[in-house]
Image (cartoon, rainbow, N blue to C red; front, side, top):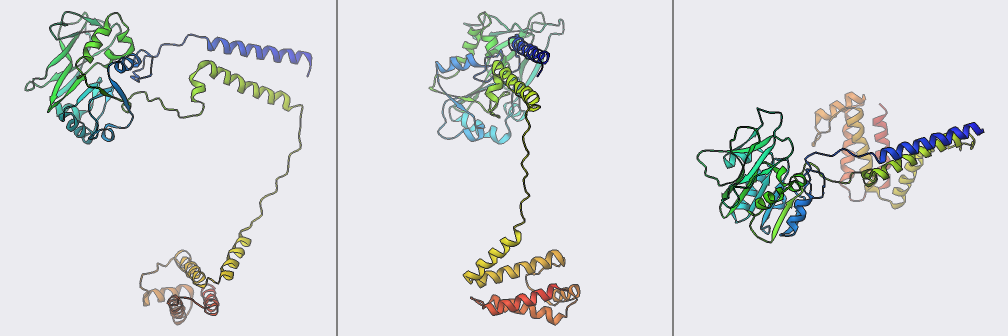
Length: 394
């Protein structure tokens, strides 16, 4: 390798390392995806919420779907938060029965499945600011002790709210409107009594996110929302209905999760490729000749046959003979074998094999005769084998 060539190689490697360093230290754009995962620290994650809930409840995470999770021993608060909650009818029926026994179902989502909305007699609508490009929701509690305090969502966000059927009188716990828009109060947090229990529904899960809680005094709003949960010991956190499910799908998951490890991995791979390119030219090794495998099928068949003969398992040999014969009739002669062999079946075989019908009948009579014997003789099997070979050689 010449001197100039070495210098060029070193410069190329140093340049690549510098590029990796700059890329690894580049500021990462903020992830605004609606995760709502309990361990997620992005703006719309619920790391802070989950941590605070553990200070007041015995929090248990349920990864199974509600249909499997809900049972007779489950008692307390069942907590769901996601951008969308899509319960099917069977699952919904089981959950509502569970609520009626004195439990609380907490739901926070922008969108709900139609079976749930129809059952509860509500709709979810979306409001946006028609007078401005900005659409920032403003929230407040309806309780007289808290009604004067306002909590603003500082990011552009359409407002999801509930429309309740006129015949229903659900308590409205929180309302909202859009800043700089028409001052219309829209329900966003409602209580639905069910038997001995209740359903608490919020149409803006963003108010429980890391971003909202850390904005000024908004944590007070979240705190008051959660104050409506019964002070029972148990709270079951749903990990099934999540927009982001953190599952390790590859051994390289942890490697690519960390940007520094990821770029270190890239450096290792590219370095290995460069080594192969430049070192491979200098070293040549003889290529080992690999002989093809011998066809051992015939030897294997001989071995198996010899085992049968040594064991004198004539009944099993007879079974193999008949299985091969029936396979030949079905797949080579294309004739179905009826449960009870009749004259039509024998006639078809005789025509297809060009053998006398009497010969065909005698073959199957011989098979039936041997089949009735508990221990066929070697002599009878040899005679049958000859007859089968004669039958096949048409």
